[in-house]
Length: 208
Length: 208
Image 1 (tube, rainbow over the protein chains, first blue to last red):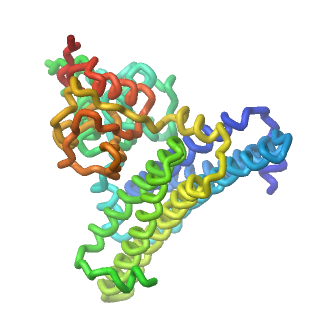
Image 2 (cartoon, rainbow over the protein chains, first blue to last red; image 1 turned 30 degrees about the horizontal axis):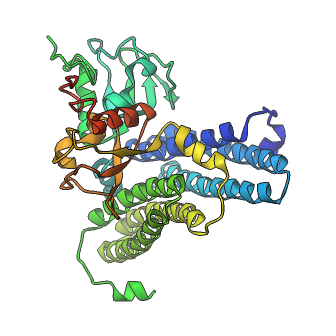
Image 3 (tube, rainbow over the protein chains, first blue to last red; image 1 turned 30 degrees about the vertical axis):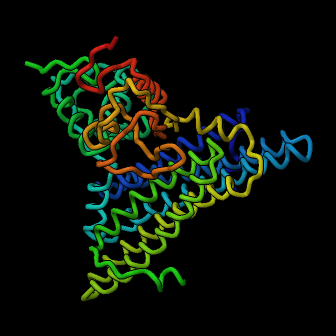
């Protein structure tokens, strides 16, 4: 509760808070699987940090929603927002539980990693070579999710992690991208990142 | 429990069951959001059916996992599978809770639909025209997730729903595809489905 008391009141609309909650919980699940796959405690810690952020967002959401209801009909409708927020919070907690498996340091059964690598959507690690057309371009310009089917959920730059990079994030040579997509998508992005494929998505020219 | 007693024993590996659980829960969340977005009770019922399927899978998984452990080390590792299965089951329950909001028939707050339409990943409805290059091709051939960034989670064909269509599913004119992807991806697939864009992903020729 201390965190909640400390939090600076930032007026936001219910909708903005709710969209942030939905986006955050999706990122949390992806990061939780990534933390398990790579046995990476830093990623796992980020999931727990986001879980705390979710608690704050849920608190803000409740306050705003309750404040906004002016009659019984609005109160009934507002209840559906709180119901959905609860479900999202449950998913957030489940992602936190997954991350805790990594932090507990218990040796995970090999099937767990295999499952994350062989489901319909998988998590992959993509190393950006200096020759790649990705270098120097932002995620907003590249639109990798639309052009290659890969969502970038985190980036390793030197010793630092960037989690949930935004549209302004500019890729550099040496970056390690953590992405979610089909096996085909991930493999294609790896070729782009290695500099073998010289264009992304629509244009298509084979390089060198 | 009756369902569990009735279920026909199908020997499967722990890994196969686990991968099916992970894929199923991802489909459930997508379908839950779709059921809310379209106010569609049939989709919501499918989520609850999948929730039951998840219970069976979890039961199978536990049996297999417990049977397979031959010593303390294996038992410890096996526990991590059950821990992860629990988290996945929690997410499945949350998806079920979302679907129940639709089945309860309470009027949902408009912000809920807006959130599903304006998050980073959204749900869209794509109508396939007879002119589209999608017609007559299977999802396996098209690889829409890699080529357009859109996951097809369900298809409406006449009065019938097909949920979680597989690679062999062949698209027909008039099909309504329910997909998950970025706004850009969904819009691009709509153009392909309308017959405006005549190629998918890599080739790229503007049609007619």
